[in-house]
Image (tube, rainbow, N blue to C red; front, side, top):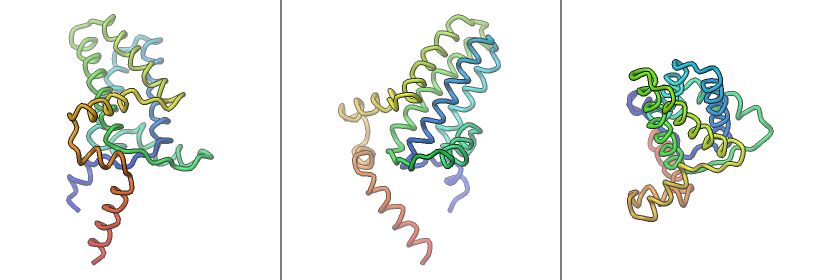
Length: 175
C-alpha cells in the first residue's frame, strides 16, 4: 500500500468509545487553555484537530492515546460508527481552533479566541458526556440536503458495506 495513502487515512468505521475519549481530552485541554489563559495551548489544540482530520489518530498524540491505550482498557466493547461524519466534526474543530489560534497568536485578540474555544468546549462536552456529536448531526443535515455524495451516505447507513470492502481488499492483498 502507498505510504502516503496509509498516512493520510481516516478510519472508517470509527470506534465511538475512542471518539468520546478524544472529546474528553479536548474538553480538558480547552478548560486548561481557558483557565490558564495560555495562547500556546490554542495552537496545540489546533494541531490536534488538523492532524486528526488529515490522518485520523495517526499523527495526533491524543488520538493515539485514545485508540491504542485508553479505549482498549475500558470495560466497553468497541462501538463502530461511520467515519465520514466524525471526520467532518474534526474538520469543524480544526476550523474553529485554527481561527482561534490566528486570532490570539496572530492578532493578539484573546477575547474572541476564548469565545471560540468555549463554544468548542461545550460541543466536545456534549460528545464526551452524552455521545451527542453535533458535527455528525450537521453532516446528516448536509447529507439529507444532497450536499454529501451518495456513496458516502451509503457507507454511513450501512457499515457492513465498509466491512465487506475491507475484506475484499484484504483478500486481494493476500492473493
